Length: 399
Image (cartoon, rainbow, N blue to C red):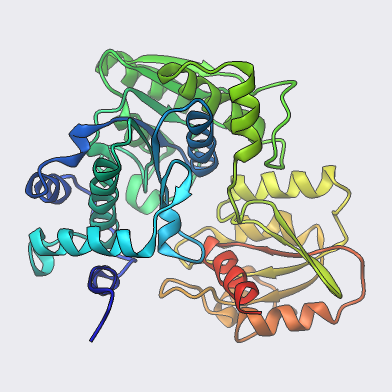
């Protein structure tokens, strides 16, 4: 007999299904007594950087004395990472109990919720139980039809608009921008990162803001502020986080310093030192803009040409576009498949990249073992998918 009925039920839903639309989530929340109406919220969308922006907002609010909840996706090692209260991961027991309740009110079969919808409802129920004042919520995919868009956010944030999930949100980037603008609300501030979005997509976002009646403000990257998350691209995410947090809570300089020092967002330019072995550099870059940001970091830090690369990704991603800037800066390369039903098999990936010379491995563990035998003082870079990064982190936790 299972001791985690809620989590077992969640796993049975299958994490890979995407069914855009709000009706199932609204029905589920109504059956729970609409927990989302018991707290205010900040909703963060965008192609890249939304998770780190959300995590930073959460840390800033906690430092300001605001009881805040944080909901992000996907997780790397444990599903409990997706829900934080006062910047602490929810316990397995509490998440299981919330999911058990959700399972009891959910419709059965195909009429029932997806994995993400069920987890979203459970997160909002946990936020109600914890009496959070503000929930900081990362959009799953897009915005307009994402389950998180059942909220009525005080502040909406779009970090940037770039090519990703075009099969769901496209076909053109203008379509993607319109979907992301779906999180804007009449009379409320909407914050847009001033970098990372082309002029044509910014035009769409401004037009949608006017149509909806939202107050769109472009926020330039932060300057002169120390931030623990590495990478020049984080200056834009930091600026958005500061603006969003200040819109809902008073933040003095001391609170900002405490909040920024407490920010944690693993798997994004995360360096892991290892006794007797080369360091690991883990980054979840899974689209071309993310890979470009990672490549720029390698250049600036002097790691270009010194890293060996463990690479793998999902077959519905632009893997050649992700691979190219990283391969140009790597020495030895090993291809693997992340632990996901959507993963591209290493042999198929090698053919897709047009690189029959590349090595393949049957697992991340085997790929790392091979790369560790290579001479060099640079780290082993793991990139191409957050699923692959999570797999390596789980290997580390079991070591």
